[in-house]
Length: 327
Image (cartoon, rainbow, N blue to C red):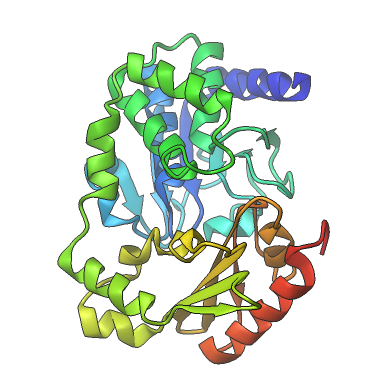
């Protein structure tokens, strides 16, 4: 923990010393990616400094009511004056530099993450693998910089924390997660309202998409592994978007007896795979064999194969690695 405290102070000092900052996160951003980015934006701006959030892809529509979400810019390139015109670029929960989708190196990069296997590619690296979410880690920065936690920042961090803990259902729901949630609620976050945004605001198209994806459910290996799929044609049939599939990766894991679930989404150049595991299995070991990353309980990767062959490749890797300590 002393290393984490030292990293927090180093990042706080960089913010104090600078005046212009960029913030980004991984492609296809989720609640933690956007919640942490928005909280960091507010922290930097509270100190009277300039900051912008840039991401490659839109987030899920359920996050449309998070305060400040309109500040998130969806762009294909970084500003023309990066890196020379900016004091630092923050990458939020990107275990590898390439995960954000921008060519960020060489440059003044500050890497803030909680994923196992982070490559520590930044000039400064704030890595805390015990943190329940990247956004929750920002509480230490608010304290180090002596910035009061306002309701909008608390809401953004709560979105991050609730999203990454499955609304306090996953194994990363530690005492630290509850203590942080208590602090966030006291600062103005409204758990019931946030749950309505994220869990009970599904569009008809997204609901139809979920039904079609569930029709692909298959169980393997005496029920210990489950797969679900999203072929591109499902998006055409329902009018849904890829962002509407956010959250579907955890559905198959809810089956009794399933230890590992894989959600395979067809894209133009291959298959994106979200992996989820119950205690005792390690999907990080599976994802890392394909160049992906994450945590033991939740990881993702890209397989440069069509859906049918990607399914076989993923199942083989799950059988080989998920129930062993290392790949």
